[in-house]
Image (tube, rainbow, N blue to C red; front, side, top):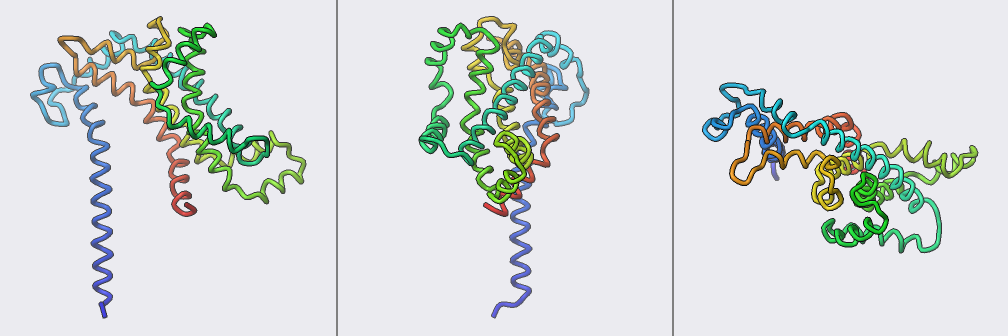
Length: 282
């Protein structure tokens, strides 16, 4: 019969192995960001010769050149407008659709839901041709509205699936109690389901904000006017055919990454709550 020392030692080894694995994964995720920040503070001459993460001399002028030469203010405001508009529309539309699929009974409900799920299997470039034709016929190509509607459509399927799955876990008794108090369907969605789904809404917001913020190919297809392009267009300015200004490019990448990092830190408690609840009930 194995002693208590054996099981205690086994538990310690298992915990140490798990912590070591998680630490390795964390370092592999954080290191590229740290390297990007470090490279953004070097010069074109030292970026390849100085391999240390802490530069010998900090060159903050790269950020000034990135903002000035890349016309970042214009592209940055464009991306902020597109991201806020798309995420707002996705949250409203997907939560309403998820509420309908979860709590209402209507004709062909399951068929329509599976059509949304099937749309998740179609890659974005696979819909470029019909999107281009449709936007031309609706006179929405080369307009912000056309781009916002397309990006909203891209994020709806996944968002509806996530929110519908979460709404299914809300007890039916809570809904019945609200109806007894005279709560309508819209008020039930607004006052009960949305507040309870904050953790999942945080996941939907981060997922779609990241998707819109990093999109470039669809914007390249829709927009002819460069002044309407999102922030990713500014990164192309620093990439030449024969010479690329890597420190300034790294500075531009840092500026581009910061808003998403800030959004994540602001709502990370809701994401952690969703992960923990999924581990407990999933």
